[in-house]
Length: 587
Ligand SMILES: Cc1cc2nc3c(=O)[nH]c(=O)nc-3n(C[C@H](O)[C@H](O)[C@H](O)COP(=O)(O)OP(=O)(O)OC[C@H]3O[C@@H](n4cnc5c(N)ncnc54)[C@H](O)[C@@H]3O)c2cc1C
Image (cartoon, rainbow, N blue to C red; front, side, top):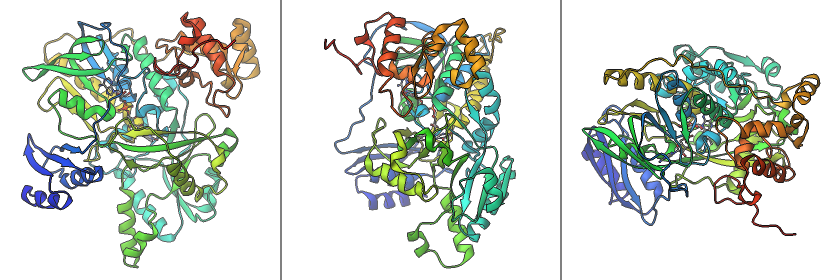
């Protein structure tokens, strides 16, 4: 759209919004009274052929983003030099660090949270996506398909649970089956294997919980599931085993540039001097790019809530399953002409909407995961949950699993996706600033795509350093396999007895719901990335993830942490230093 026409259209949204072109981007500025106007204006300004991206400088009256920063302020990393500084310890940053560790480089990952996977990477559905709904020209498709192909070997190397039972999408009508057939045809071109259109009887052999209304559907055999935080932690641990350093509670605050290169990165724990920076900072990727004078995009946070059920209803789903992405709402049906072609066109258009959740997922731990929704928010830190969204998800998913009840849910959480307005990943070298590599706009399928994104970023970083004249050698000691730690619940009785003979701590069960032993908790506390908090242990070995949600085991876990870290029990916190659990003895 021509700039003058865009400006006219923007005035219809709000007379305060101004548009201007700069550095091959479209900038929007002004102050409005309602965030929905920001989203509307930015979506309208998207023109992928003409601009690199939409840069929103729009403000909402009365709103300032409150960034949650670590309370620590010290000089632990002050004046440190490194070859590569990765900003963000999510799955993208950790996958990049592990790939980079194949070279003899000083690699630092700085993460503002108290653990890796503090952002989206621990607040998602864990689906290793197929990628069928992404457009052929998108980076989302490229990295989703490549990443999916890497997951099996990666999970084996890192000892992270991974199951590949496929995804199933159900059709209610013949027209929906036809739309699925068209959808499937595009799969070959996209490099996606194992797509099969099935009737109800054949689907039932793969997914016993086909809803009564489904006449058939599409089975996508490459769909899988993983545990997102375990995967991120494992990537970080293996990167550390191969020489990388992960700096927790370390937030990037500003940067200094010289000759279009980032020279200094200021954190709450001192100033770091990197040769190259990787921006993998999730919802803050636009702010970090701005600090590096390389901003060509805007992140507009989009929240999604997922629910975890009791394991006793885990059998309700064997794969990952949901309605077709095409399903038209009653209000859409009213506006579409009543002929099959018009309906199919509308359905295909529907399938392209962003951040669609799968529906019902059999988790690697045997629970069922239900959700998520997708709603815009202006607050990048908004992980709140609410009853309305909860009820909405239950209602929507009961259509697919009528026996699923709200009382089956044992926990629910919200994650904030990090899309750009162009709704694609931004994975590239800096445009103006040459020593930054961007991994931005990494919304779904970012968990799936991360291994492939990390591989490319590592290669480009290596090549950049070589081109700058640095001598980068291979890391001859690189070992892609993470050190194995026993998982009691995966062993048979003989194997457990053998283990307990060697170390009696494996015989002391701390979490009854999940069958977690003291030995496994101590292993986590002595791992390459120990995190001495209740949540740190929960994410690594699962005590507190069961039906009782830690009611029984939390005090025992706290005691083990206090003994291992040699700190008083009052100092053991839930996640951040401020989240104290106990204050003093009552008796
Ligand atoms: C509800 C929901 C469901 C999803 N489901 C799926 C799914 O089933 N499958 C799938 O493939 N994908 C899914 N996704 C998407 C996936 O979770 C993300 O794409 C992926 O986790 C992105 O990882 P990341 O490392 O790029 O970002 P993040 O995980 O957000 O990591 C960025 C990190 O940077 C840190 N950081 C930010 N600013 C700074 C700073 N200034 N200094 C230091 N550190 C900083 C943050 O604390 C954060 O830990 C889902 C996302 C959501 C929200």
